Amino acid sequence: MENRKVTLTYNDGKDSLDFPVLPGTLGPDVVDIRSFAKTGMFTFDPGFLATSACESKITFIDGDLGQLYYRGYPIEQLAENSDYLEVCYLLLNGELPTAEQKAKFDYTVMRHNMLHDQILSFFKGFRRDAHPMAVMVGVVGALSAFYHDSLDINDPHHREVSAFRLIAKVPTIAAQAYRYNKGLPFSYPKKGLTYAENFLHMMFSTPVEDYKVSPVLARALDRILTLHADHEQNASTSTVRLAGSSGANPFACIAAGIACLWGPSHGGANEAVLKMLDEIGSVEAVPAFMEGVKAKTHKLMGFGHRVYKNMDPRAAIMRETCHEVLTELGLENDPKFKLAMALEKIALEDQYFIERKLYPNVDFYSGIVLSAIGIPVSMFTPIFALARTVGWISHWTEMIADPGMKIGRPRQLYTGAQRRDYIALEKRK
Ligand code: CMC
Image (cartoon, rainbow, N blue to C red; front, side, top):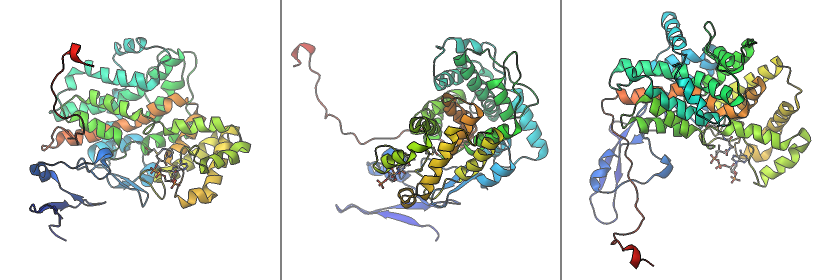
C-alpha cells in the first residue's frame, strides 16, 4: 500500500499525529518518528529493542527464517564459493569483483599488511600477560598516530586507504599480540600466502621453523572470517557508527568497536564454549551437566541466539567445517572434541532444547575449530575482531558517505534529583 502511516493518538485531547511508514527491500517496515521530537517528548527504547538507528544496504538478517545475506548474497553461497577477501570487497563496494578487480584488491590488502616499525615499540609497553584484546584496543587506536595521510574522513580516497590499512594490519597486530604474550619474536607477513594462510603463518612460524600451512585449516579459518565479517547493526558496529558520527578518525572508531566486541555478551561466546567443555571434563559427566542446564543452574554455551530462533545459518556451515578439521587433524577421538559432539547430539534430541528452539550457534563450532587448529582461547575474540573489521569499516564508510549524516545523540528519560541548591561543606550532614 502506498503512503502508509501510523497514527499516534493522545488520551488527553491533544491532536493526533501521523508518522510515515518506510518500507525496506527486505525485513520489517519502519515507522519514521523523526518529527516526533517537535512534540517536546522523546521515545524510550533502552537496548534499541524497537529502534532502527540507521538506513543500511550492507547486511540483512531474518532471524525467524535463519537467513543472513551480505549485499543480498546468502551466506551459504559465499561460504561455499567465495573467499574472505572477496567477501571484504563485496561488503565494502556493494558488488562482487571481476577477476581483475579481485586481483588488484588482494594485492593492495597484502601490500599494506606490514606495521610501521615504530608500532612495535607499543607492544613492548604492555605487560607480557596482557589480554590480546587489551593490546588490540591500544595498538589499533594508535594507528591514527601513524597514518596522518589518510585521516581526512571527507576525502573518499583517504577513506579507502584507511579501509585497506585496517583490513591489512589488524591481523598482523592480532598475531603480534599473541606472540608478545608468549614471548615469541615478531613475525612478519609473508608474500604469496592467502589472507588466512598469512595469519596462521604469523601466529605459528618461528625464526627456526616455518609453519607449514594446511589447506584444510586455512580454508576453515577463511570460513570463520567470512561468517563473522558482518552482522548488521550489532553492538560493536553501532559503537563504530556512533563514534564515527562525531567525525572521529577511522582507526579510533575501529578501536571503539574492538572495545565493545570484547564484552562477554558479544564476542566472548566461543571462548565460553571451550571453558564449559573444560569444566564438564568428560562424556560421562554430560548427563549431570544437562540436568543442571534444565534446572537453570547454568547455560549450555554455544546454544541459542537472540535473533536466530530456528537456526543460525552460520552454524550449519561451521558444523561441516568442524568435522573436516577434526578429521584432517585426526582429532575425532580426542576427549574434548568427543565431548563436544556428545553434547551437540544430546542437546539436539532433548525436548528441553527442541521446545525452546535452542540450536547450536556459530560459536559452538567456531570455538572447537579454533581450538583444534591450536589457537589459544584468549585469541578467539581477537580473531572475531579481525574478521569483523571489514564489517565495521563498511558501515563507517556507508555512514560517512551519506550527505545526511548526523552526530548520534540519543536523549534520555531523566529520573534523577530535582533542581536543588548547593550546600556548603560545613553545613552538610
Ligand atoms: N542453555 C540453556 N537454556 C537456554 C539457553 C542456553 N544456551 N539459551 C536460552 N535458554 C533458555 C532460557 O533459559 C529460556 O528458558 P525458559 O523459557 O524456560 O525461561 C529460553 O531458553 C529462552 O531463552 P531467552 O533467554 O529468552 O533467549 P534470549 O534470546 O534472550 O538469549 C542468548 C539468547 C544467546 C543470550 C542465550 O541463548 C544464551 O545465553 N546462549 C548461550 C551463550 C551463547 O552461546 N551466546 C552466543 C550467541 S551467538 C553470537 C553472536 O551472534 O553474536
